[in-house]
Image 1 (tube, one colour):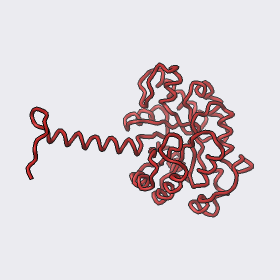
Image 2 (cartoon, rainbow, N blue to C red):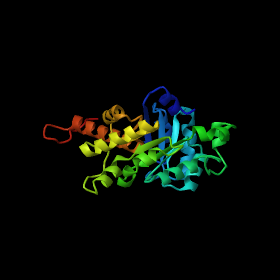
Image 3 (tube, rainbow, N blue to C red):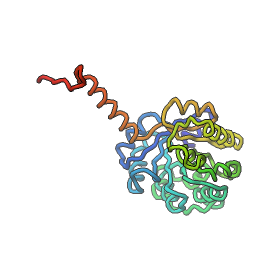
Image 4 (tube, rainbow, N blue to C red):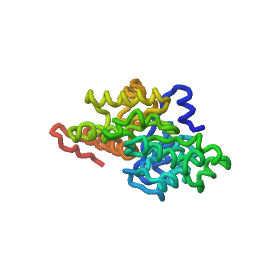
Length: 267
C-alpha cells in the first residue's frame, strides 16, 4: 500500500509537490522535505525519461509516494513510466469517459487492462511480487482541465478503476471562460470556485480522490475544506525562484542607503 492510500484510508488529506527540473539531486532534496507524494512532470517539465529514472531512484529512500505526470494519453509513455517504478500516473487532458477508461487500461495488467508486462526497474523497487500487487496499488489520476471534461464530469468520475481526478486550474479556467480569464492557480472567480467544488463533490460521491494544483498553503487548505483530498503546493523551480528572490530582496533592503543607493561596505 502506498503512503497516499494509507493516509486517505485514515481520512487524512495529503500534500503533493511538483518536480519540473530534470535532476536527481534536486528530486532527492524535495523528497526529503516531508511531502506525502512527489510528482515528476513529464508534460511541461524540463526533463524526459532519462531524467525520470534516476530521479525515482534518488527519491526511493524517502518512502514518499512517487507519481509521474504523463505528457499525454500515450500508452507507451505511461507504461514506461510505470516500469521505471512510478507509483501512479497523472494524465493530462482527459475529456471523456472513454479516454479515462483507456488511461485505466494502460495502467492495469490483464484481465483488468492491457498494460504490457516488463517492470524493468519496478520489480526491483517494489519487490518480486510487484506484478501480483500492481493492479491494486498503482494510482490512476485523470486530469480535468477543459470545458468538455467538466461537461463529462459525472461519466468520467464513474470510470471503473479510476482512483482520482487531478484538476489543472489554469487550463480549466482558460477553457471554461473561453479565453477571457488569464491562466493561473488559486482562482478567486466565483464561477471557477463553483466548478472546483462541483468536481470535488462528484469525486466524493464516487468514492475517488479529488486533487487540486495550488500555489499557496492557504489556498490548499481552502481546497481541503471544499472536499479535495490531495493538494499540490509549489514546485522545485518555484521554490528555488521564490527563495532566491527573497534573499536578493533582503540583501538589497539591508544594504541600501537612505536614497536607495547601495551602501559601501568596508573590508
